[in-house]
Length: 151
Image 1 (cartoon, rainbow, N blue to C red):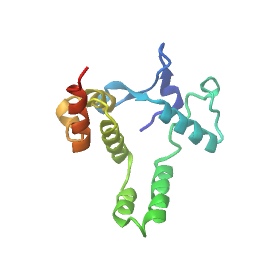
Image 2 (image 1 turned 60 degrees about the horizontal axis):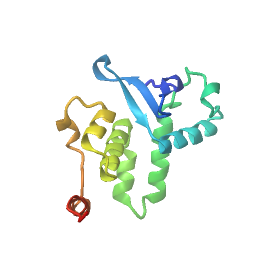
Image 3 (image 1 turned 120 degrees about the vertical axis):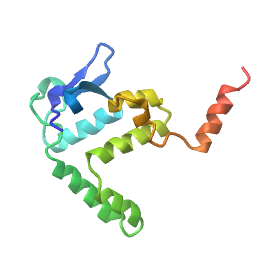
Image 4 (image 1 turned 90 degrees about the vertical axis):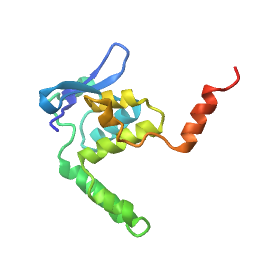
């Protein structure tokens, strides 16, 4: 991954973005919503690093190592294995790409537009993003109800 704290920037609207370089050396940026910033702050505290951006060393890697992430998923899998063996097995195979997929699926399930998720994933084609599960029947029913609600 190679992302560092220096790659996180705040724009004029106080929105946070992770600036990075993807496939084919293509620059891009990924939105960091407040929940992601809170999780980052907690992670920095655990690493005994400053939470205040002004005190960050911009060279500090966002992830100490991928081994940290893999250990986390393995530990969670151990805890839930008896009750949820299939989920535990998925967690044992989890990695950065799985996390991208999970984030995209969750965003779509929570109502994010397909084009927004495409842009955040930095997909060149909407067709690539459309493979992620987008809705369930309940969501479809709610959206149709809202679309044709008496005003």
